[in-house]
Image 1 (cartoon, rainbow, N blue to C red):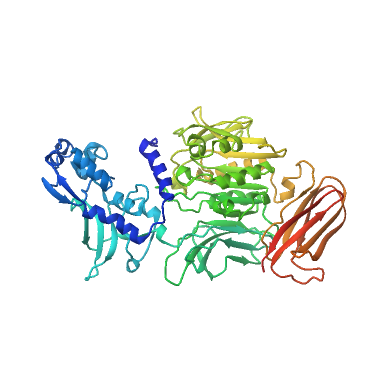
Image 2: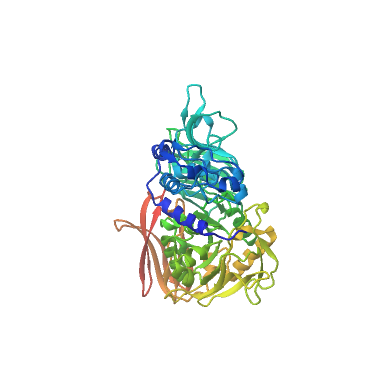
Length: 621
């Protein structure tokens, strides 16, 4: 593995800055391209007689003394127009070729200009990409669908920015051309280039959640996406091959009478009548059961890397949970940040971050707050991913959260070892030679797995083999000012990259055992301090039925009643003396006469000898 350079760090920062800029448009992309074609500059003898031209590659400068038009082509170059003019005025070489790059062992320091992929990157206003990584930021389209601002890309070779078609049907493009030795605007042949559209010019991918509300149902719900008038749903039984389930104009879909114990995966894409293309969402999954899920998988790995994030790494987590009898829901991390999902409704939360890093924020401020509340409420959190410490602790994008809620401190960027073993006396005691970081095993290579140390009462539970570096921590205790005990396991590398599958399953089994998990939420928290507590109903919103859970500290006269928003009593669910401990009651959305009530917001009130508490819930028919 190559260590991070100052350049890589700057790319992180530039990417974050780019994300804060105004929305890119096709017109803006072309406006960005034109100055590279039209700029005029004076080429001096210094620019063409720079001594390194012969030292590196033996290939002379392509220009002559005098006024020139368009920025010079430079292999590996990434200079914008102002920087190009400044460097030309200082006497740097006017452009370079592959031979110079090869002989110099990288981008020639003495030459100024831009190459084809850097040109497109600047026009799209994204961090510097190559022809290999530009597809990670775009979606393939048909040649007949090409519009101004799209690209024609040949991986590991060349890329062109499409503008329009010539009278003879050939594409007219903007490009930084090695053969033309500069940036040009011209008609070219189609050749074997792949047409691609920048994702920022497409209908965004919906952020969604998949739930197992019980009764062998599956519920999908998602956010409205700008410019989308309908949504295409796809499902799969393996997370890889998907089938079309049709379109809907609603923001949710429920499927009944599904197979008990079966795992289903879903993707969603926005569409409209104008023919604009949508981006497929990440892959989410659910395990069907007659009982509501007690575990939530949060997919927080959005970053597109050179390993081409396939966005379906929930598969490895789902397959590891299945043999343990754990029912699970899943959601986009954005659904948590936007309060569409309440973590406190789950006994276990599994947060997968892959290689998210600073470029896409491992934990946003909203997500940090949600995790804090969850742990302070006595939750069980299993989080894994590379560069979490790099982002939160080293770059201080959440150092207090990292140290006090993930109970770790960042030590180093990479142990350069991709094998781990359990620490004696930890939850992984006895496990050894566990490997990760192998793209050939169906996931991806891990660039920078953090080296961490225990902090705030946590315990190291995994080490990088043959080093003094630590790879994971475990913690059981209180968080913040809470009096409740919670549990945490944090891997400083992505769980999904562990291989083979048998070893990955062993790690998950130890985590679940540490959490004390069963398929029941109440079983997981049965040893929590006895106190009066009314939980949010689950699922919420709901369609056919929902479950209300509450805890009594002492034997009590209990009344649980449903009201509508104008205070009218809809139905009494409980009116009796009950023992201390946890109780669960379901409501099927009917009134006292067993008639279905209308969609809307309802209140449920729990009254005991000494307590009254009211919560809201939403019924959606």
